[in-house]
Image (cartoon, rainbow, N blue to C red; front, side, top):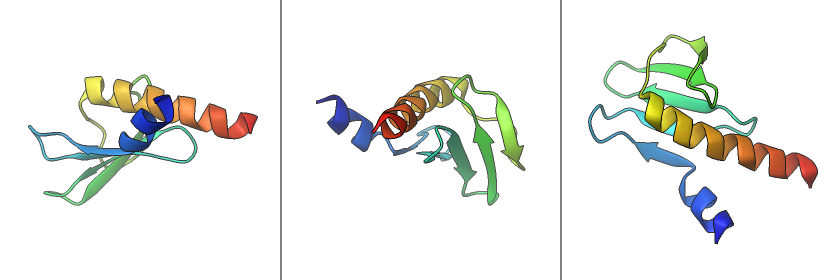
Length: 78
């Protein structure tokens, strides 16, 4: 069941802003804003790491980031 939830959570769109949140292979969250074409990378705490986009929904970043970090940790453990 947990694997199904994580698989379904690899990408989502913020219904208020239209920004797309996607889990990365290394446990970060990439946020893409289709209205501007800007992208940003954030950690599970919602802290900006790189990219032009420096602000995103902290709640979604936290939720997606924790799932991405767990997925990366499981992948490392084998």
